[in-house]
Length: 318
Image (cartoon, rainbow, N blue to C red; front, side, top):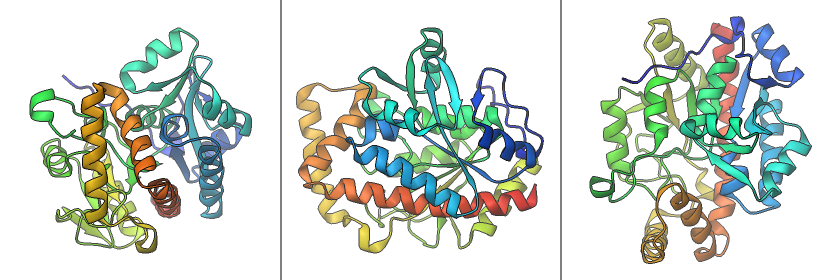
C-alpha cells in the first residue's frame, strides 16, 4: 500500500525537523509567500560543468524576478537541504561522490552522511515535507521504452500519485515512452495539464503526437486546479507540461533519430537502471553537437518563468 506523503499548506507549514531550510525559504513559508522548489539531479547528473552551475544560478534569478523564492533541494553531508548557497551549488556541480538520490535512496544517503542530488520524486517528497506546493524541473521521468519486458518505470510517476506538489516540466523526457507514461498517469489519477497547447510536448520538441489530456491557458487557471484538487482532500500531485519555446526546440523528426542511436549504443554497452537517463542525456548532447544542451537549458528557464507565476497565483488562494 502506498502512503501519501504529508504536504501542509505553505501558510501553516511546520517543516520536518530533519530538514535544513535557509532563512530566506523559512521566512517565506512562515509568511505564506510563494516558494518554488528546484531539483538538484539536473545539476550533478544532467549537465556538464560549468553550464550546470550557470543554469542553476540563472533559474533561481528568474524565479526571484517572478516574485517567488527559489528553494533548490539536495542532501548535503547527510542533511536534506531546502535552499542552497552558491557554495552548495558549486559542491553539487563538481564533487565526484554525489549520489543520484530518489525517494528510496534518501534514508541511505542521510545515514551515511553523504551528498545526494535529488531526482524529481525525491525533490517532491522533501518539498512536501517543507510545505512547498510548486516545483520546477526540466522533464519528468516515466515509462522507459521496453518497460513491458524490463518493468523500468520511474518513481516520479508513483510520487506524483501520492505527493501533493505541482510539477512544472517540458513534458516527459523524450527518451521515454510518452504514450505509456500518459496512460500510467491516467491510471494513477494524476491530472496532466498542458500549458497553451492541445498537444503534449516531448521535452526537446514541442510536438509528441499525443493529444493533451487537459489544456490550460494561464497560471491562474493552473493554480485554481491545484487549489480545487487539494481542497477536496484528493492526494497526489499535478503534472503541468510547458512546451519549450519554438525558437529553442529541436524538431521531433530530427531528435527521434538521435534518440534511437543513443538507445542502441546504451543497450550495446549494457547500461541499465538509474544510469540510463544520465547516459542518454549525455550521449544526446554529443550526438547533437551541444544543441540538445542549449535546448535543455532554455526549457528549464522557460519552466521557471511559468512556475514562479503559478506559485504567486497559488499563494493568493492560500
